[in-house]
Length: 290
Length: 282
Image (cartoon, rainbow over all chains, first blue to last red; front, side, top):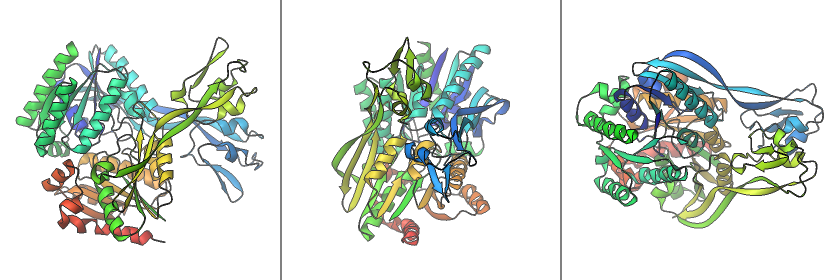
């Protein structure tokens, strides 16, 4: 089974629009939206949820006021500044609480509960392009990396059960916890960049990350015609560093128009933009075979 | 002291564009303005401001180090650790420092004081100046999963400046929460697309839960603005300003130029943000 992950470093380069377009072209695959704290794939794929699961990402502490002797030990030892002393009461700020349990352990009067905390939901759904595994992290929750790992593992099971030989993953921006959880062990990473200094700076960092974890990566340039000099620079960079540039997509309003119509670009139009995405898919499909 | 955070749910909506142009304009009007780039995984403000970096400091997290001579292999440290950073294998403690959240549980609980505090580098904090504007950014180490500790260190480096503009990471989880913590006001930058709207709604939920004052900036404003305006009207959120969808702005961004310098006719677009800052001024 092969796993293709689409990331970008910088947000807004067109990751999700390109991911759903590739998903429209690929056959026999399972799709995963690993951008769990700002998931957007479902807006285009209109999933019918089949299975809903609760996600418990870790534990949280809570002080029982009746048992609390107000010694302040918890406030003193909390490294996350999560214990507040308000109107003579000690209260745990659930947003700041890291879930380490140190206060619970050291409370002299056993007044601090430490229990699994509901921190989101994840789903197995049907879409017009096949199965989608996606999630919604609760408001202001943490542990997005754990949730990413959970849905990727589930996608592998679903793919196995349905005899799918490919998993297509939409990653999140950045190079931290959820991105690391999205790419670890993947067959191929597609980096979507744009010819802007920020886009280039960020894709170089994300490329270093793929190197760090020894995952093969290729690049495509979106909106390549907004700055031809920088596009040339990216091409030279790819040449010099032996990274395959799989395609150059022109700037097009059709991306937003398709999004408003809740369609992939492949369904929405038949022009030079959709042609280029089809060409990119052919190259990637061949790369995945090898 | 004023702290204004620039955030968004969706990435690439124009946070850094707003943060850099806004901070630059403030620095022309006021003394002691700082821009603090808290998007430590992908910091971009430096591209538009070309700061001269004067100080560069490592940001480290305390992680356990076991003194094998003293360790009695009781396993209490591994039991208290919620992050699987310590494991007891055949009577010996193994440390996985990259998983450590630095809660201190292990060294507090060790009955024989066998655990000392080692260091894991999470990134660097850089401090400098771009003209009159003070510049601070955090930059995470490649491969580092945890960004909130570095975000906290980055903010600390800029905490004494009179006006602080915090450029936040995208998303709605822990890095954003760490970045907006302590801010007087949050400017949410969005774009008039279905993805922009959906992620804005998530970010609004977070800001409400955190009890923040906030308003919206529509970037790449066009005929689809109604997507955002309808939502804002329904939720009673003010739209601070709109930055038009102009190819010249996109080109100027691609080259790393400030809009207010390269296209001064757009300077007034940022004025409502200055009014927000004045409104906070204590």
